[in-house]
Amino acid sequence: MIFNSNTMQLHFKDALAYLTFNRLSELDNIKHAFSTRLGGVSTGEFTSLNMSFGRGDSDENVTENYKRLCSALDIRYEDLVASAQDHNTTVRRVGQAQKGIGIYKPKDMLSVDGLITNEKGVALVTYFADCTPVLLVDTKRNAIGACHAGWRGTVSRIAQITVQSMTKEFGTDPQDIIAAVGPAIGKCCYEVDTPVAQRFIDLQLHESVVQDKGSGKYMVDLLLTNKQILMQAGVPESSIICSDVCTKCNCDLIWSHRATGGKRGGMCAILEIV
Ligand SMILES: [Zn+2]
Image 1 (tube, rainbow, N blue to C red):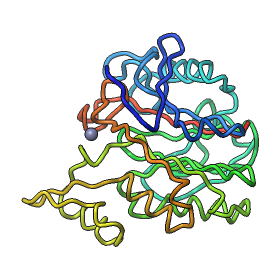
Image 2 (tube, protein in one colour):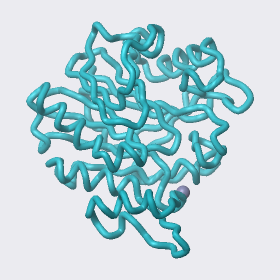
Image 3 (cartoon, rainbow, N blue to C red):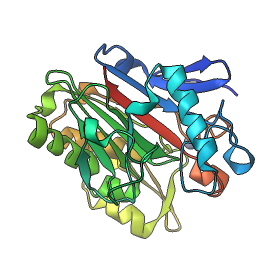
Image 4 (cartoon, protein in one colour):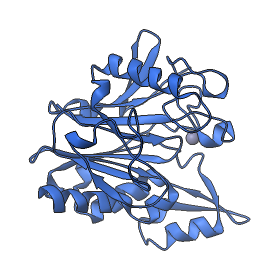
């Protein structure tokens, strides 16, 4: 495994590996991380750090994986609260009362692709395996947001909707947000057919978002699309960092839906105010 990145750092705590964004690590009011495939207890197609419940892995294994990741990150397992993702655009405000939901308490809501909070010690958990994580930190009002932007969520502007939710709930000025986009499947590997490409073309963003390969095939840049949408939401371009780590190119390290043909576990992103 060769890991090369100008934007992210790979860390090991014993056998468990996780990633952080260099820019977010500079902020002392938050903790954040992205899990990898390495250092968990799951077996078979979930080997070994699978953070996704409900894909066929045992709940006991996924729970142990969370406990190991939390231990490596020095985050309390009890503080986790998870999304309930289904490629829509509902963003939920969570706090102390929601801790445990989707992790050690049952889900109480369907269709939650974004989470926001302004409370300390509430660790937002979202899931990925090629789809785009978007993490948002309001550096003035001490509020955070995390959302799951697959292609459907991306073209439905969930990144912008999450920013707007932070403004509505916490008074966030988008100018104060530092945003991290990815790691996700890169333009190098994300080939789509005409109907999906057209949805991106219809957004009328930067022309390099969609590259026509001919024969009805297109390469789409999910990360740049989310960056452009965040800029339209008012986040300064200089405050948006896109990961240069492609999930499919790095499928020995990170879960990639396409690289595994869907036989896979999942990565999680964790973001918490401390
Ligand atoms: Zn790639």
